[in-house]
Length: 415
Image (cartoon, rainbow, N blue to C red; front, side, top):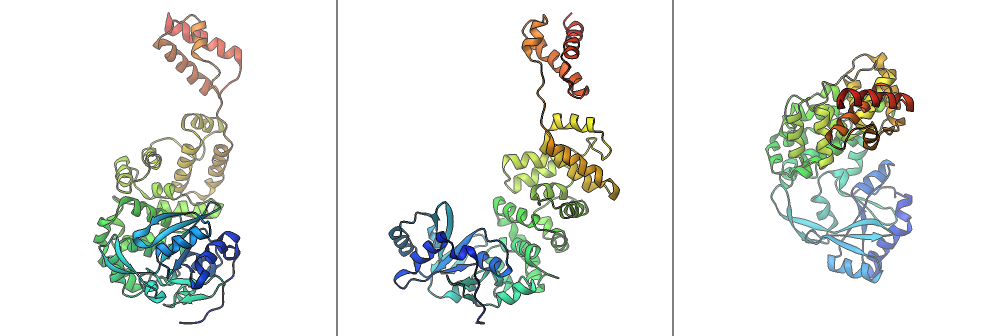
């Protein structure tokens, strides 16, 4: 094992982190940071989640946390995992383990005290990295060299790793989109293509979580193209995908410093087909809100949203659709637009969306009844007619004009 320079980051020495590490390390115990936290620290990237590995069995971990007055949640004791909570910050703690059996979705594990044995069951070499509380890095499979080279390489035999959990096929592409450089590892790619039928075993929730993370990468398109060429993408997405539209949307995001919106990127990738969008939402077990958004966008292709809309027309759309729905549509139409010089108009439309404050329609049913219309369904119809005129008038606040319009509609519809 190569000896590496220690890493030092503020999160490692934060009081919350130290309290957990100290509780596990007392009286001869041992604990190390593991996985993404170590990987990101080595890359100089922000660390959101701090995972910890320890040879201590779960009962001993719980005993030590209790003694240190650190609350915890038994999030996965059958796999040796619990989550300590310090000032609301979670620390996932897992006992070193080895796989006893796997079925492509879940594993039966046994605990071990061997750090390398624990590392050997992890998916990629860049995730099989550990660091002590004082920053010493432990690298059993040359993960640091792979990390620096942007080489996403399985620990051990790729086919065996994939058969242990078929989600690793999608993780291969997701990690390459985020951390990879150049071509994918050929052994990994061949194994993923050969084992792609196993994706059918995965739950929709696991697929969507992994794929939305992939779509959130700075540029997921090259990886998606490789997935398509390997006949892997067709296993999880139906129909003729619009990779060029997605590529354009990604370019717009990056050129304008927009935050990646993975669900919008998924909408850009899918065909303009409500049934196809609904099928993906169902297969991926998306939330009701995400499903509604995806299906709504799939059915919006026929709407007249073009770069040369007037401000008045944009405000009318904003009133009918709301700022978020129109913003989504503008982004997709912009991605469809091949004329670069239209970018200024599209950005201006987005600025209108961001600044929009919905005006309140100044009339109510009481105003209609005060104009002589008896209570009933006609009140709503008249109110709707006046509101249509008010929208077309660019939301006029002229009380006299509103009163005259109400009078005219009442006369036309009530008598």
